[in-house]
Image (cartoon, rainbow, N blue to C red; front, top):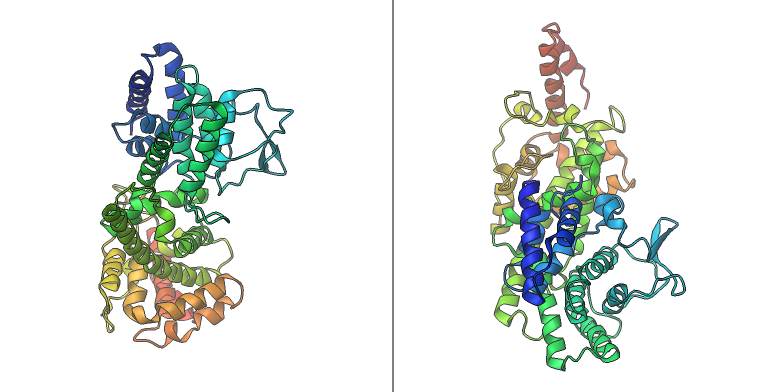
Length: 471
């Protein structure tokens, strides 16, 4: 989304929502807020958590939801490698850094600030607390900024409701030690705040505050329930470079760097349960809608598990091969340059032989994953092909029934439990219808020769080099 378009839309959302909740705000103090949001959401590493995302999460009807969505990803320490300088001005009086961790100041050090206390009370945090990056750190800091910058325009009840929406976007939470869902814990915090601050809400109004928060939080993760698994994987691929910054620059990352990003995502997807993705609270959403969300999420996660497992096997094989050259080999050395418009360069896939599927997919899931590997996801990414020719070659050669055994071996190699050459000599990689390791090795050599030809190297080089390969 164009920066100016994002700014104007953000400004319009701020003005319209504040007007609906209170009164028309003057433009002069609102314009810097719009700039702050857009600057933070268009940082160098933002690929998924962008202005488009916050507008989608906000929906279009409820002004509380619109405002909460604008702020909910303002702070994302892992993605931005810190806190945006302009953003940090709003929270520097409340936090400090100790041993690489962000800590809320002790009570005696905190300025008396009702807006910040709203965030503390809604999240159930306390002075002196070390913030956990995976348990609300980013959401809490984002809410603290939202309540502060919006406090001149909105009453306390609206600020509490906005903070509650942002709190609900802390993802993938299970039940508390007391057996409460995250939504029920949030309800308790709102009840306590309502009582202590005399907000005047009846219990049904507290329920509505939490329902609204659940509605927004479910939109925040709605891509998990997309009906098309290829679209879900597109969003997954947009997330990878946000926390794997070396992927920025398609031809500059190493085999190891790409493997680490795939390995982390594969581990995360295998950990995730559909019930931890979407929330349901007092009929929000209704049972039919909730079950459909879980059903689609379960299907997408199963597809992603198999897809990423095969991708991890492939990159593990390539990493083991790269160890014959060094420990930080660029992926383009083995696979060729990432294609650019108008530039024709050789790629590894051109030097792999066509191969028939001796063991066709046994299930609709396997058939779908084979199509995703061979034909690709729905969109190209800035750092990776949408299809996976090398993975397709390997899975055609070994069949889906071998994935489990190969994945165990790949993970043993990557964990240092299995030497690279022992992994490359795995029976399934050597003794099938084709010697996968030898074929890939020769493909890499021929790729190198094709580059040498471009440098006018003598024609006998390919024969000499290929004949010298011992695999």
